[in-house]
Length: 290
Image (cartoon, helix red, strand yellow):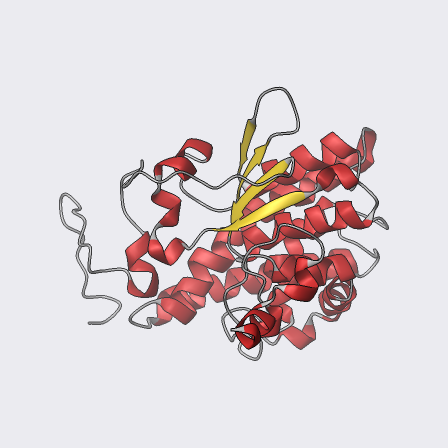
């Protein structure tokens, strides 16, 4: 099979065995596949997620709020195993009909509020607590510019470049070249902006940085798709400086650990229900206690 041999059928039909590494979680229909209630903990915010880049955005935000002294941002983080289809359970679909992580249930008011899509969750928390998003004016608009830049751009990095370069069952030159070119253009956009600013929307650290860093920051730090050398990430010196600075933040380091099921066991905190869990319930400690 080559780049030029496929002829699309008149009517596309779903072949369940196709799709590569993530075939089991992709399907052309929505809705629940099975009945499964979601667990609910004691805290005002119930997060159902996995430590993919989109999930990390929200756990970083929650940990940053707590680090800023916002005690009302305490949360329970429950693991959603997307490879097992947890996102298609009836309870999860009630919170996010799109069956994607992260999903948040805000139980801090009289009635629970569902919040889905990572940017929506970041905005919801920022506006609720008055942190990491200017309240008005051009500064607020600039943060939102970059927040929505990330939402529009990252699919080219993840579903485009990441899929065809790292996960597709067959490697083809055309899609890899197409999406590599776009990802390098995006890195250049960030690099030019960060040449004159500490953070992407200005001098202040905001939800725009929290949205962009899990994707592009971790990419240049060598944590995404084993593609750092391929993309020549060291050439984006301002992105690298920004990525390292954010990576050094204690709240970011904690946020990366929550709902993480890969990497060093000491970096995996499958569920988070209290601050002390980072010291007592990482997978290395749990396995040592067995």
